[in-house]
Image (cartoon, rainbow, N blue to C red):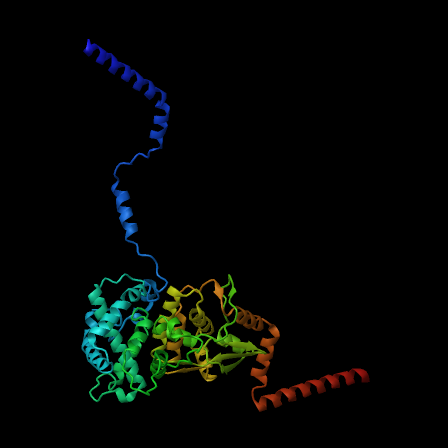
Length: 450
């Protein structure tokens, strides 16, 4: 009897549950529809996610780049260090190993100038490591310890080079770098290369570690850098409106030295292939050449038929310097001052005759070789280079082209060049004009008498 009652009770409960499930069936189905179905495992999805997780974020500190391959194909030697690696991108190259022992000697000298011990300096460099790595566009494969060691050795070497350039009394009698002009010149050359740089803040940090005695006035990193490159290159004054924190590295420092203090307005143009006529064409149109007095190479002016171009000295380092400045602007800057300056000079120099004309007016002085070598340099230096969408010299080039296409200017120049260039020629022209007038008068008189 009890068993039958229990069975009936369980049956009633089951009926009640079925009634509840039936009433809520639609709600359950709707809820199940909202639950996302986990897709089956896809190895491609996993691989892409791993790739995305490995992508490092872009850093605003990035300023040191490997030279683009298309530029290296034009002239790879201009971007390749000869004697010394500076920074991680050429670190460990066999062809540069001979300088490593000299670096260690300079490190010994550097340590003798500071009150800090080596452990203190290593600790400071470790603090700069993360920021220093972010300055390079390429991922640096060196371990933390190797990176710190490389920075310490290279930075102390460079600071010692700057100190000895500024203070000749720091040069020891056994110094095998400064007592061999070819060696210090090669090191100076390698300090110009885009991918052979250390961040400027690291060099400034190392300079602050140097011991300075009481009462001694010590130059800044900007002073030391300017003095060193002034001995090597023909550069202008570094603008006092720029602080050391704005300078990325040595190549950036040199770029600042060439920029105008009061730049003209950049203009957009779709005519980037239309620069200036050649120097010979300008001369044939009667334009006079004059050496500009501005400190900046880009201060080129044209007014009243006279073009003023700042003096440019060309030597063995000129192509290396400007190729690396061009590569740096190509990779880093939107406003390409140096690129457009070199493109403008390229348009003015098409043949050795153009070079001869600029040398004659003392706009160019050369220690490079023949005029043909100089014209070849300018004709090739902007190959594979993007000029940008803004044109710095647009108004200048428009005015030059307008002047050259005005017939009267060319006629006047031809008349002056062919008939008034020498005193006897002037006398001959005047005599011819007088004779022509007399002949005309005689003819008129003859007609009247008839």
